[in-house]
Image (cartoon, rainbow, N blue to C red; front, side, top):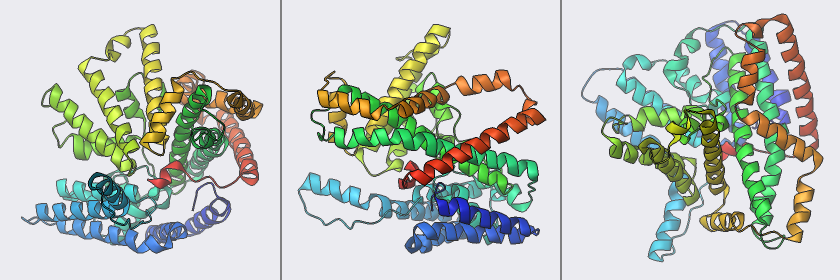
Length: 478
């Protein structure tokens, strides 16, 4: 079930919210949310509900065992980690491994064609964080199965995050309140995310799909460099507005039910280095790898060379986490290599940050690197990525490309692109700080303006949904 679908917007969410508000007893509310979350998952993949519940049971039982002192705790942790990663590897990487074995050894091992469970990477990592945190400190765990089930299954962030740690919301599971102001603020945040997805991400995503599909594969003749750059730009905008929109919707719905999730995006396209980019992009995932892989490996405490190796390993894992394709692996390694070069001073982002002009060039370098790496990320294969980059830097144009460029860049598309570019960087937080200083957001006039803007965005989003097709979120595939 997609957040931007009619059945979710007009049936599932209103029904769950009304039933939730009719119940005053907290445990009953928790049971309702857990049951609704399982229904939500079953609506998308009924056949994998049992797998999801198995994952929940494994992590709950491991957590229960880790609550008690004893020599067995390390063995329990190891077994739980192996089971979680084993399930993830089985369903996500079996075909990929066999494809590469067949290519290297010239064998013909048949591929099982295992269907990827929706959100398996997210709920697996969330389960791992629960087990590891409980091992580190038993106070981070719980003996109550309902609490663990709700934590792992809560539908706003079940499918595509943000990845939440149990100790961040444990107190909210036990005690929370959500008045009219919290509900209104959550609803406004949800509408903002819906507008990002429907009005911007889907619009620029159409252009990206045309470029990475028919254009790249020669349907319109030789690839046109202008179209390739346009496609790379549009996908860079699409993935940001699509995923940050999903995160806004998840955070907004969580707030409607009394939960406060941490921010997952902080205008990453305003970053002046790759390292800063990752402090702003998909924060819950980068924090997960930092806490459970980078720091245990030694982090930056063992010299620059070891730090660079640790960072490359973390980014390799980040890439392969996104999907079973060499394009994802190289995307991750590319980010790791550039971040390491920044840390070593080869790419002088620190010096550039000392002046306004330098910061401009730092942001330009970061945006170019992010866009080119996202073009690699979007390509279906390394061959497609090679053809894309060859066309981008060839400078070649064609009459067919000019015609298609004029068709794709309609007035509506140009306005959408302009809005997308302006709102993706530091302009929005800068204007917000100047026009809406601390405390001004709660003023009646500001609240009224926010509500009117939200109503307008909701109306435009519904009109767009009524006239458009089905557009799943990009991160559903991970």
